[in-house]
Amino acid sequence: MGLSFVSETVSVSTPATSANLGPGFDSLGLALTLHDDLTARVTDSGFTVEISGQGAGELPVDESHLVVRSMLATFDELGERPPGLAVSCVNRIPQARGLGSSSAAIVGGVQLARGLVKGGLELLDDADALRIAARIEGHPDNVAPCLLGGFTVAWTEGVAGARAVSLTPAASVRPTVFIPDERGYTATARAALPAEVPHADGAFNAGRAALLTHALTSDPSLLFPATEDRLHQGYRGPGMPGSASLVAALRSIGVAAVISGAGPTVLALTEVPADFHPGSHWRGEVLGVDDAGARVKGGMVEHAERGPVAAGRTS
Image (cartoon, rainbow, N blue to C red):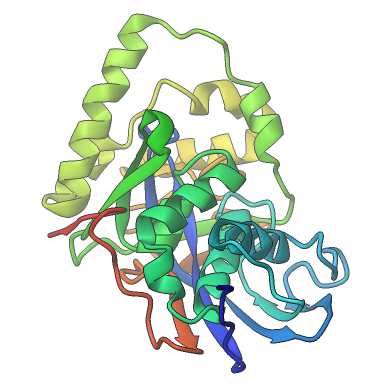
């Protein structure tokens, strides 16, 4: 017996994310209160995409669009594709800036597909959704907070694939992002990393990543030392000198600043002095932490329930 698709429009709000957070390379991430809003409905044939905001006029508007590709991958997991799809994207997350725009599209596509199938949230739980999204993205550090919200620790477990836990950050954590005019690309940033690092640097980052989990959830006064890193930011700095300089300037006045994801956006996890001016090429914005993750409305659901297999949520 085939799947049953809903006739109503389904919508999902997907948060921006910041990965790594300094020492937590490819494992730690934070969901932010900046969202893309996506809608989709099943049609009789074909695939169409309407885009407004970030990426309008640049991104594809057919089945090669990342949201549609992620939807189709999810439908394939469920065992059947609909005859057609009409998708609309209102994009607010800047593209190629280290704020998880691709993860927002991927998670949005997975969630839309789940919502368009009657019983889709039971047929594919959050563990499955995370696994599918991480497989498409290639790593789980951004898709985990986008799907689950909050502060996440993600890892890959053999044939089981990506897994994650979501933790609640301390109420006083108010991230500030500094978004530059220019774009950066994950592949370029990864190419700057060496194949091997000194054992001492690995041990240093292990300690700082453990401390960061405590600092973000229980004692933000420790965020400055907790965000020190020796694994990736120093190697990537020459490729994004403006970002490296801004991180150094913020840290010189005691602000816990890091490169957001692969950059070039800079993330500050402690308060930035009101008289600090990053320069005309940077747009600063104070955000909150999104504690809910990708929300689904319409169809057969009003909100994607958090499954206990993909992630446990703790305070």
